Amino acid sequence: MESIPHILACDVGNSAVHLAHVHGEQVTPVQTFRLGELAGLGAALTELWRGTPQPRKIAAASVNAQGLKALEAVAAEALRQDVLVIGRDLPLPIDTDLPHPESIGVDRLCCAAAAYDRLGTACVVADFGTAVTVDCVSDEGVFLGGAILPGLSMSAAALHERTAQLPQVTPRPVDWTFGNDTEQAIVGGLVRGARGALRALVEAYATQLGRWPTVILTGGDALLVAGDLSDSDLVQAIVDDLAIRGIAAAYYRTLLK
Image 1 (tube, one colour):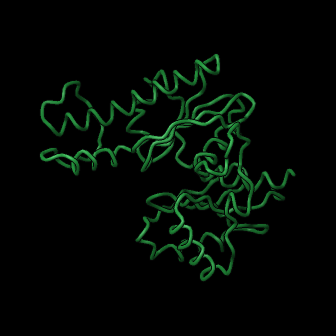
Image 2 (cartoon, rainbow, N blue to C red):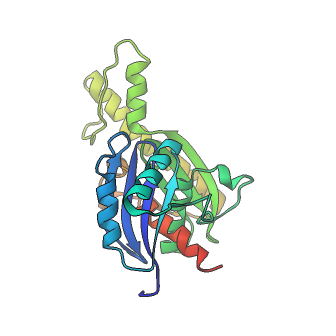
């Protein structure tokens, strides 16, 4: 463990920057900064960096060019460090069976890599964030691809903005079967629709794999969609820091070459 590099891992998403200190399997609590509200990012990076022993690196995965630019500027000013970016400075964290793997969202690949590294078997990784991604990894650890659909909040906003009378709603736990007003009908449709989409995609992947894969969820709406895991016949676990772990895995992969 002493020889394993410490990684300050940064996940630059569509709406926020998430960061944590990773050392092997150990991950500090993830800190989140909304894009456009990055005033405290420099101080957070500095505090984490000061507490990170040598050898150490700062690495990032990004699906947002402007967000990455902002992160790199803050890191250069606060830490005097360059950020190692997956797909630019670091290799992709997992093998793929795709014609153009460089076009796949690196956050999807990081989550898939982290899940497979832990499980060592075929799995489905579903990220319920701004957008929803549901991806599959084979028994051999190869990223096979997946599906993308709108996130719950994005879908809620679209219903409000593209109709004359439907209200803006906030997705929340559903404890009813029949929505008895418009708001309940929308929320129930969003949450149960997401659950249904997840189940349909996992079933399709299972058919191709020839067996049922382990299903791991991550992202801000993961718990909302999964519900009570003790009562779920579909989802095995929710891992909030999956992308962060995958970013570190991408750097660790370079040490094996």
